[in-house]
Length: 198
Ligand code: 5GP
Image 1 (spheres, rainbow, N blue to C red):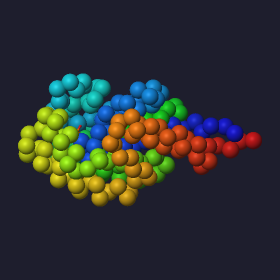
Image 2 (cartoon, rainbow, N blue to C red; image 1 turned 45 degrees about the horizontal axis):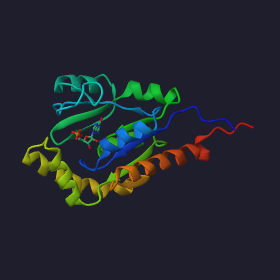
Image 3 (cartoon, rainbow, N blue to C red; image 1 turned 90 degrees about the vertical axis):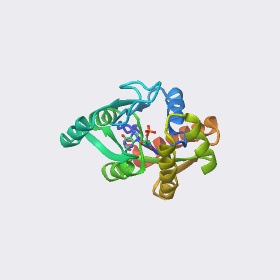
């Protein structure tokens, strides 16, 4: 039996503060062949964020231009800023047989679901809303108003869990990463993803 040569497209969503970023970093550490899709955003960089590694930080004009030139696989507005997935690197990696991970919010994930129904959709949830508030506040990068906006958004987003294939509670990073690895392994073993050639 031959392996399917197409890479797996993995979509990770979940409320801001659920710990998607940390889980993604740990997962990349554990699975070095996994490719992280670097998004474009109009949001300002946070301290410690690197251009081209965490995000491509662009102006609104540039973002509009990317949409107009059809260079984004999906895009959405989130708390007053725009975010989008550059198309070319994702498509290139998948056709090369590389697995790619997208860390995006729910409306972007919906667009991906329409274009790539074969993608794997994973929803990350915090252990509780209280814990979520504590995590966003502790990050110390957002104003009170932005924290409130993000928490409102988080309560909304939690309703969308049923649209996803898997849900992972991020109470302990190590355990959550083990679950993500198990999901990826199981998905790669699915019969429908393999080319049967005897
Ligand atoms: P943050 O500002 O905290 O980095 O991200 C805010 C939200 O935007 C998070 O839920 C994050 O997953 C999401 N996000 C990041 N990149 C993208 C993207 O390319 N597309 C979409 N739709 N959402 C994104």
